[in-house]
Length: 257
Image (cartoon, rainbow, N blue to C red; front, side, top):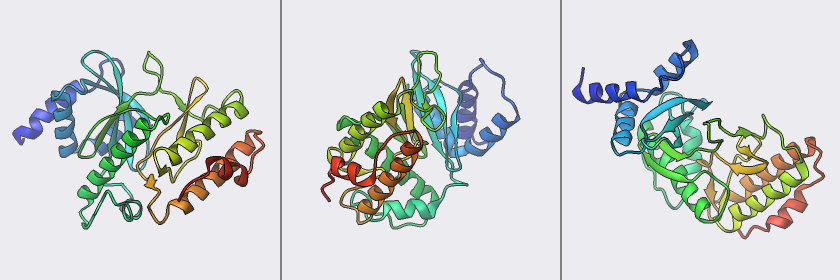
């Protein structure tokens, strides 16, 4: 075995908690995401003190898996690992084009993934600094993104609104609109895929996640994406009993394209 891979694999063994047994689905997920370069990247991050243990999945998607990480000082972090084999590169290319922060002229899938991860990290940084309720970005390397863990002190992750609707939908929705306004007018970004799958319910407070596809207002597609986001919110929160409409939200957000 290549010495680098052997070293990373050894660290990989440590990066699995002894607290729970892995079933067949866990093993399948592990085989899909822990390729050679991912193992080396995790080893590097662990060596730098960012993570010590990986302790189970928060979410599993076609393009990325989010795992719970534990640091040396026993703090929880979220570890998002993008999978090279199953990512939608056409979609990534669509959202990368038109972004003045990136000038992607390659068809190399791994390089596109790395740019995508960098984009998510930059978007999170921009949003966090603008005061938007998003996970605090920690660091990124290759196809791995480390962000603040959103959940309780016992390591139980906050659930998406889709799985845990708010107790008071009207109050929650009003809080969400405040976040949307900050998102657009202070961070000057448009989410592009905003729905109750990408909004966490943390003790009845909305936390917006999954901002890799988010685009700057200067992007030619930003207005179209914001219209789509608002229409999605109207549809989903109307089902929860909130009385709202597109024009009301658009006027409140008052985007400056």
